[in-house]
Amino acid sequence: ETGVTQSPTHLIKTRGQQVTLRCSSQSGHNTVSWYQQALGQGPQFIFQYYREEENGRGNFPPRFSGLQFPNYSSELNVNALELDDSALYLCASSLRDRNLNTEAFFGQGTRLTVV
Amino acid sequence: GNSVTQMEGPVTLSEEAFLTINCTYTATGYPSLFWYVQYPGEGLQLLLKATKADDKGSNKGFEATYRKETTSFHLEKGSVQVSDSAVYFCALSSASGGSYIPTFGRGTSLIVHP
Image (tube, rainbow over all chains, first blue to last red; front, side, top):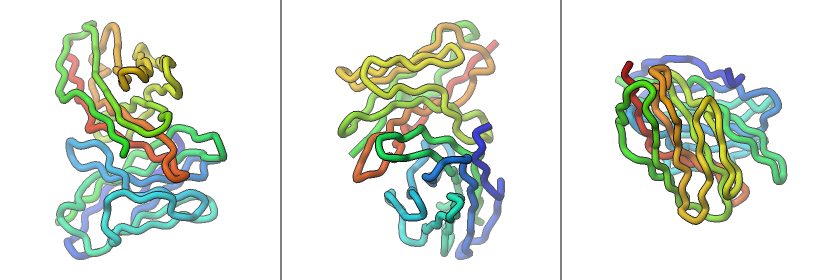
């Protein structure tokens, strides 16, 4: 196990609703990245947080937003859900410090279904 | 921008066969390269990595060598097992504007028959 935990594991929402997904990063890690993985596809980068600030963003609309807390845990919020938002959402944590950047360790993911 | 291209699957093999999954990349700077594995219904697990040219990453019988001249990081295993059936993702991570954001390929499904 990686020590990265995500909640909930599964979720069903209705189109137009809002959802919050949570991630606890591995102990000692200060960077959290969120990915969307559609069925049969590779993970697509949503955004990354480093020391509580957004530190990179992929090609996702503003209704995808996030937070990182002082303990480095993180939330992903999605507003105005659309059917195409149905996917596995993965959180990954890593440690970044000057010239050091560890590999990303992934949680088990949250399976979001929008109906 | 950065990108990773993997061979399309599924790759179907018999137990004890030799495995190669091709991966090539495009990146600025000097990326680190990774292979991740995803078992059904689970998140991604790091399988192996290489951080500089000519490095060989290895784990659980899998190997991959960082080839800068061909921008490749092909995954190999000499004798696959049924338990190796999973989806394998090649990925790279390089500094971009102060961030290290892994970029993933689309994944290659491996099916191993007894």
